[in-house]
Amino acid sequence: MRERMDNTALTLARWQFGITLTYHFWFVALTLGLSILIACMETCYVRSGNRNYKAMAKFWGKLFVVNYAVGIMTGLVNEFQFGMNWSEYSRFAGSIFGSPLAFEALTAFFVESIAIGIWVYGWDKTSKRVHLLAVWLVALAANYSAFWILAANSFMQHPVGYTLRNGRLELNDLTALIFNPYLFYQYSHTVLSGLVTAGFFLMAVSAYYLLKQRWLDLFQPSFKIGMICAVVATVLVIVTGHFYNQYLAAVQPMKLAATEAIWNTTERAPLVVAAVVDEDRQNNFLQVVAPGLLSLLAYNSLNTPVKGMKDLQDEYTAAYGPGYYIPAVTVLFWSFRVMVVSGFWLLFIAVLCLWYWKTNGIVACPVLLKAVIWSLPLPYLATAAGWLVAEMGRQPWLVYNLQLTAKGVSKIVPAVSLWASLLGYVAVYGLVAAAALYVGRKIIVAGPDD
Image (tube, rainbow, N blue to C red):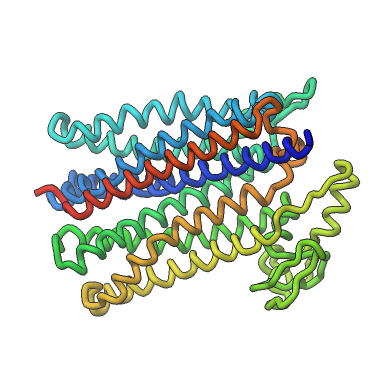
């Protein structure tokens, strides 16, 4: 009975953190990219004196502030969970995990909080250049903040710069934490994903006005900015994602094998395009494959073998003791494909828009404008799928190869408390999401200030 209650508490704690983190990052992803685009708009206004750019910056700034406010609120909740639901993890790795979070709060968040106040309320109270400096500080601090948050997460994915003493991890090399190779791939991929989200957000909202033939002098250039951003950022996301996956083949081979549903070590490993995964029997059936392509993508060689999950399970059992070290293969396999398919669809739509823009003008193709609007959920879906791959792919480890997830959950928090807080978060977050959508829709329908 005690073991069943412990498993229930672990499952609920994981669900709670997964839901709140995904919800939080949906808002953060937009603000990371949108802050940069707004800063570029205001830069154009200051340099050219064209007041259309000022109107654009103020309009998109309202939508930015709504997302920023919700992102801050949900981010604070996530940090509290480390002390409540994951106290054993905090005891084990808190002295390392807390360091980048402290840097983020004392530097990035501090600057960002002051600068956003100046920017929101200082349009007519500061000089143009001071106001421009404020918006760039907001954009840079937001992305600098993401660096420290991901530095903490990258340590959990690929621990570096630590010493294990008296059953606890201690930081002995801050430089190693900052220059963690995993952080390079994760940060570049995450920030570029934010720019993809922001680019399509600009395109979708602008498409709404272009279809209605309203404020064309503002939303045609807004659409163009979003379109260029979307094309460039989506290409770079795909490129960084490729190199990210090659890095995972070296440091997290189980994650790569799970996302590709490779059960047995295979030379000239095929890329499994689609399959029905049977985790109980540890095989696939009804699969569609591209022979040798996975070896080529992962190692730049058709003949390099890819380790399968069964062999990796045996290696981990020998190294770390009895246990089941294979993550949720079906979830990872399809999440990865949702992310990839969404990315290529977004690139196709963005490039098609660019072609129409240069030939006939985007306004001449209302079907394409509607396709842009209906494609807006895809960056958010791809972001959620990407985080599922990143976080579930390292299971059953909380700190990779150092602490199991089951060992990090709090021992004294009962399942009933987790049920109550989980249901409470879902209800409150649902209301906050509804409020954010309502306010955002109201801003969009009202249009820019005269």
